[in-house]
Figure 1: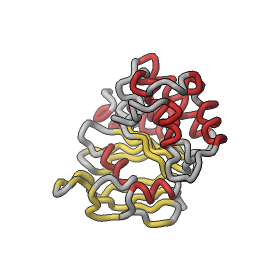
Figure 2 (figure 1 turned 60 degrees about the horizontal axis):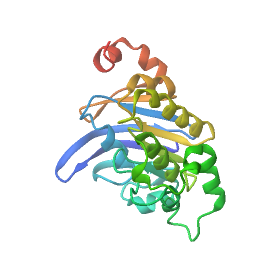
Figure 3 (figure 1 turned 120 degrees about the horizontal axis):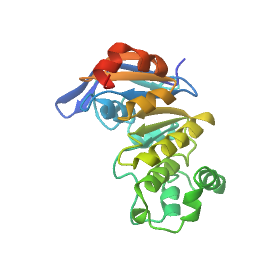
Figure 4 (figure 1 turned 60 degrees about the vertical axis):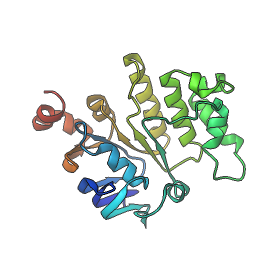
Length: 234
């Protein structure tokens, strides 16, 4: 049984339907990427898993439990964490205060969780007292991921983690995601940097106009002539 199962999902915002019969799965320990053109519904699919859109049909199940109509606070307690693309840190709070906010549902923040994040992102330990809003884009993205890891989720949802990063930082960011996945955390990622994302993931989905277009192993999608021509620039 898959860790995450999305079946025939229709979703959107208000009366605007974005997703039409979207299916996707993530197995335990798997690294899955959603790619596609702008406006394809990639981020909407991600947000729908985390209860941030209007559900219009279909279902979302996590670890065998239906979470279709759950709100984000309930979903995060079940073992999913979400890192949005924009406004994903509290700029006026320090690095450590941001990390502690990631464990706000707990009565107390375990020092072991803080230490694990600092070990994974040493720059955050160095800057633990710095206000998050004064950090670089890459450092803020690491902080956002670190905060999402404070509850040791089974599944980490990442929406465009390389967005806005300088080209020389993109590979470093993807290396960090590889490391997180290597420790057993499942990854579901939306990414515009499609070639790099597909090269690194286990399996990929290509969405277009709110619908499934292709699904296969990442390398297989990169080698598919139709996928390359339609979505990867040849």
